[in-house]
Image 1 (cartoon, rainbow, N blue to C red):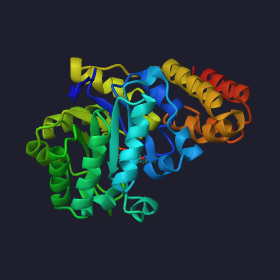
Image 2 (image 1 turned 45 degrees about the vertical axis):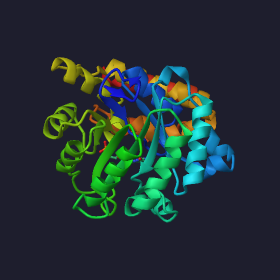
Image 3 (image 1 turned 30 degrees about the horizontal axis):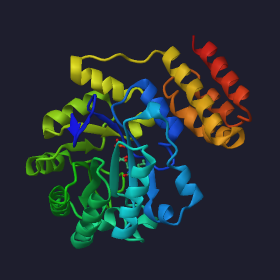
Length: 321
Ligand SMILES: Cc1cc2nc3c(=O)[nH]c(=O)nc-3n(C[C@H](O)[C@H](O)[C@H](O)COP(=O)(O)O)c2cc1C
């Protein structure tokens, strides 16, 4: 598929996941196979004020490209400035704007899904950002604030008319958060309305779900979030399935190598102590359903060094053989 002039080799996007799609996790997913990875959401205000923490979220490596960097904010000037900062850093292949986050802290600032109630402000932001960058520009929306989808149609149209190059839709309302079911029918309606590519998102839990979403909605590509946390191979499996009708299940060997790789990258990126704390949760995602996983998960609570983490992974691998 193509977004503006960017040729994309596949139809899979790793969803932006705050606190999760950091550089090491994106590199892991890329190693496992994925067309496009997305950053965590990055505060336009934070970039405006040169916040060290926010700038840290822009760490990137060539190997992960194409990379989509997601920005959130509620003011055209700081959003345009952020787009310019990201463009000048030459790390991003796509800039994505967050029109979907329903977390209170974000909505209270008038950002994320709050923008879906504000067509005029949305238009001002999109026009300002479009002027600030020549990079492919996408936006990620929800259904809106009710189930009708009217706000999604309106914002999607404004986006296309403002020069946005593709739209991601997660068809849940603001109030739903991540509960209930994603309304894939709405993806179909938005796709029918627009001429730019539409990327469908929400409730792709298995490879076959992606095929079903594309068949039912006609969307051009799919975006996967939570399922990739437990199975970083799912995006390459989806691309294989869409291309050939079949896909490989990763062996336990592949899964253990992925866990080791993530451990090393976490330690290199975050430093040993913070990485160990984070890995306690992260590594447990990968072993769901494996024999003896509850004992392994218990042991993960004590990780205190890289070598300890790697030894626990090795020991558990031996147990599962
Ligand atoms: C922990 C977590 C963090 C998220 N962070 C973001 C974010 O930073 N930006 C965003 O647009 N969506 C964010 N989302 C929403 C996801 O990108 C995605 O739209 C949602 O999880 C539905 O897709 P899925 O069913 O494949 O998980 C987040 C979701 C979760 C669970």
